[in-house]
Image 1 (tube, rainbow, N blue to C red):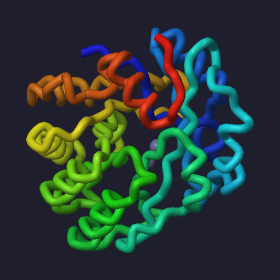
Image 2: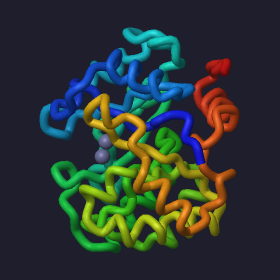
Image 3: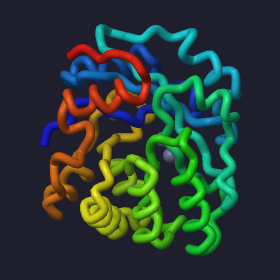
Image 4: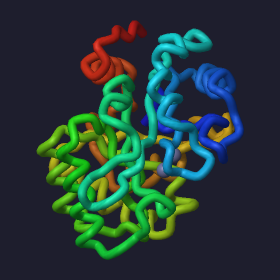
Length: 242
Ligand SMILES: [Zn+2]
Ligand SMILES: [Zn+2]
């Protein structure tokens, strides 16, 4: 399986990442990717930029960078089981790609029921496109209920390759999540969650797992440039010529 874009990438704006938009774009270009993404951490991660950064993102940054279409998004934080997020609706409405994740500094891990309720709320939020690193054991939940809700609400589930290294339990939980995505026909994206340009496109762990479980390639949105372009066009109203 060949992946045509890395849809989860951070820049120095995130506060604990080390490359610029231009450096990430050059890395994507060198890898032969068809798109470049920008998904910095939302404000409640310590050191992350404020509301204005995201509010003005699509005004400040052009639609392409280093000759690639630039998709301007964020990684928003799920804050509680009421489904609250740390960016305003009006800000999210201006972005082109919204990953929603749970991070311990923003939502202290509780019990599986709490985490499940939080994901069910996220599933119902039309401003969220992608469910980020769901396999984190600290936020273990009822994956079957969650993935079914993602299917019902048209969400994309991320298979985060970096999770296999840094998020305990991902090696066991991610195959289960991927099998449920196949069962309920939920599209997935493979991502690196790069915090440094040289990590853009590092998909090995995720791809190995998907191969091992014989995950249906047609459900991997970013395994085909045409498939991903048509999804992104529908999402953003922009054209993505390949
Ligand atoms: Zn994250
Ligand atoms: Zn991230």
